[in-house]
Image (cartoon, rainbow, N blue to C red):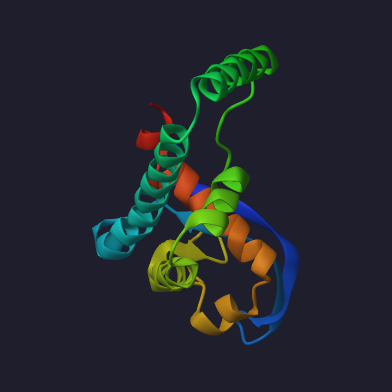
Amino acid sequence: MDTGIIEYKLTTPLEKVADLNGGVVTIKRVFLYAPTNKSLAQSLRLENYFTDTTKKIQEETAAKQAKETPEQTKAREGREIVTTLAQKEEKKDEMTPKSLMMMLLMYCDNVEGLFEDFKELVTSGACYMDKNKTVTLTEHTYDSLSTKDTKGMIGEYLYHFLLEDYLDQ
């Protein structure tokens, strides 16, 4: 992502969040910022969840294919060709932020760690509740996010900031 900022619209707005003037506001969107060297350790851990998960999927697929009969291999390869052609015809990207998150939820060996590392990243300055970077997302506010929004934010963050190089291949 060229801008280094993702404006993420919350599916469940955060009610009664204190603002800088001592009042309360409703937060309907947050701003995720590209990682910096300050958050390098968390960024690398998040990347590793993806690479470890894709490696696990590849290993499981290879093991499954090794057990196939020649007829099963031929049938699978035929299905893969048809699927690839259909995706090209529909101009579908193979990976989206949502499908990326679904893959991690299904295959990641440490989903809890993924969520904890993402929380550490965004509450240490990678997420703000305003575009001017004046109100950071605190741990207390993060804990108030819906799980749907947290999953969505993780998918968007990984897809746009950390995995762009992997997904372009």
